Length: 170
Image 1 (cartoon, rainbow, N blue to C red):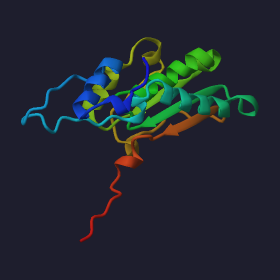
Image 2: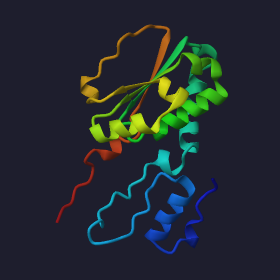
Image 3: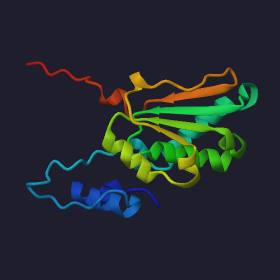
């Protein structure tokens, strides 16, 4: 897809148009008073798709291989949003670790009904078949089984940055 030449972009609108050209997932929205608060927030896994997820996938499978040769790899993603990170991690696993890909599971836990539906729409094929979708709070999630031969990776890439962390004093 190519990168973004940020210095060539004149304003935020040019940035939105470039995102739409490169990634196709962002609907092009013209600025009007009615939609001035349109969500223009993009996660790292969407802006740098698939490379961001491939990097995380590489890190995961570096820990799984060798001395940690587990029979099954399970990934639990908390607050999985649109499913972009899931898609790219599973893509990396399929291309680079096909044996682990065959037996792995990916669990997406999403409290938002709207984002849960987006995950179901956005993921497809073999990637979707590897997924179990949980439309609930992480505090209500219970894994079905635990075995010493399974390796769990828990991802919360978009969780901590959404917690209140700023304080305004005057």
